Image (tube, rainbow, N blue to C red; front, side, top):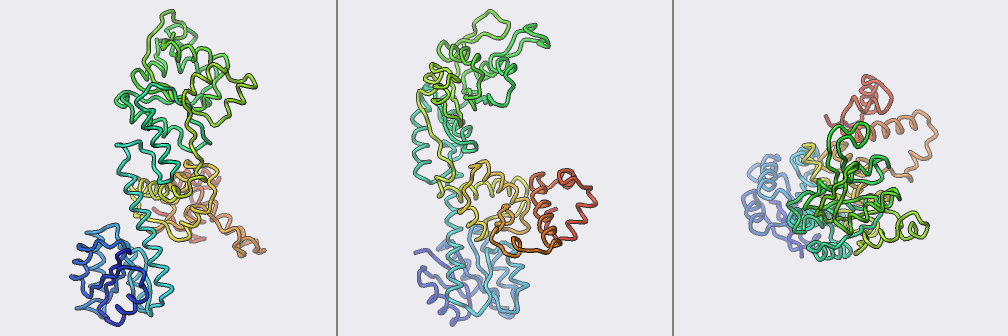
Length: 449
């Protein structure tokens, strides 16, 4: 059973909580000193803390001091503060200091069980996330606990030391470039360059020169000899993303490079030997493109010596919260925000959404939520999820209410997309900065400054 520390000087409350929370291995403490000693000894993931502790049981001074000390020595502990009915102000102060949640007496068994269970679940998710973060840079860097991701890591470990050409298949946003980097990182080429090029993002007439380079005077504007991406990846790995969008006439030149390991720059006559490992990726069906004569059959078989199918995020539900927490910690650090976790409705929104944009969409939503959050937890609204079954929003016939809700949502989304830049937010919304500030004040929108 999970260790649970109950800190309260009232023996009656201690017994009531212990009885109510019978599913946990309960440890009791009645002073700040005994509470700190228990935290050090038992390392509980969750603590319930009465703010009214001796020798100042009538006030919250001792309880808040205990909270501060607990979070100093065990910053990932989920502390649930328990207060009297008239002590909401100190409860909110405790939340600002880093408490996970608060509960007001009298104790109700069902309610306290839900709060503690939720805290334990969040502590477990964060623990798994930290365990995953510890492998980033030393292992593949592929984050996730699902069986499919375990299989993916195993395949990467097996193919990375070889020179086999890998083809990564998966929907947009599933992490094909991350997987390609993982293959490079685990291989013996990891100290050499990793060069990525998106074949779909470069105009057809420029892609050849980007890949193979050109000699001075090869065409108008070629003022100096320039190396291509293939040469820049010498000794390392070249990642060709969206290989299915490569022009048909360029595929033959790529095939020759893959077979002979030599290239010729545009306008050049000299063959240059290159030592480059190639990883390709696409979200298209190359076999259908081969049948339609849109992709060379010989090139297809050359780049797909081994194929890795990267599953969409909707097929790895157990990884959603781990990835979300990973991104949350990353962006909280980047943007200097005191955001530590997700609320219950935030967790449910993350779990129930289908993620058509896969990991890229999840990453963007968490990034914007860190900017939008006004507290130390991210809720469903911060993530950009709105309850479509909310009758007040959906069925409201008051135009003023509808307009206020629509404008609030638009401002919040624009603010998130521009990463908190008010000038760019106003520009995106098509209004002036003074008008934007006026709307923010009018609707009481929480903006992190």
